Image 1 (cartoon, helix red, strand yellow):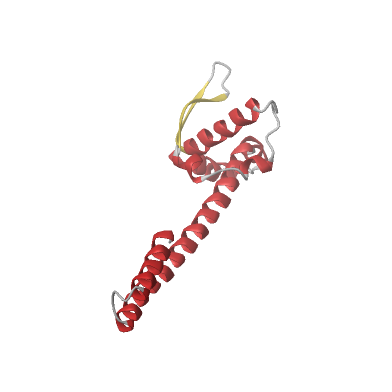
Image 2 (tube, rainbow, N blue to C red; image 1 turned 90 degrees about the horizontal axis):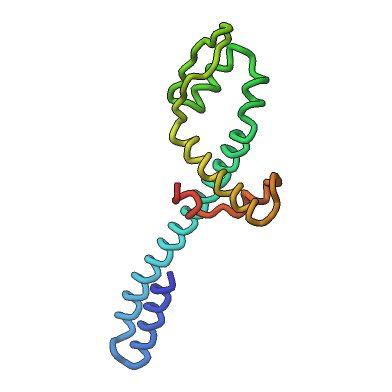
Length: 150
């Protein structure tokens, strides 16, 4: 938008220097104005998408931070759905006592990404000397690069 505003000013300066007639100025400024409006709309849309992404990311991180408790509180018939949210595959086996244990798993890519983001937040919190003190405000500092690194 800065470039378009500069272009608009250059047109006005050129007109003032009598480089072209007022009719040309109006046409050219009209084009620049349309581009400015379009740029503002795209910027507003991008901002809205970013805010939505950030809100979904926060929800995902909160869900991930409480996944074990969520799973324990679910009725048996709901646990399969919870597993399908987190895992592409979950391999179960029986131990020597006949108890079911996880033999292997493959997380959904979305949750692998969330784990990497969460690890980055935890690392930052630990570097600040706030061990085991991740607060919701720590999520407020997420930026597009934090998400794009994943």
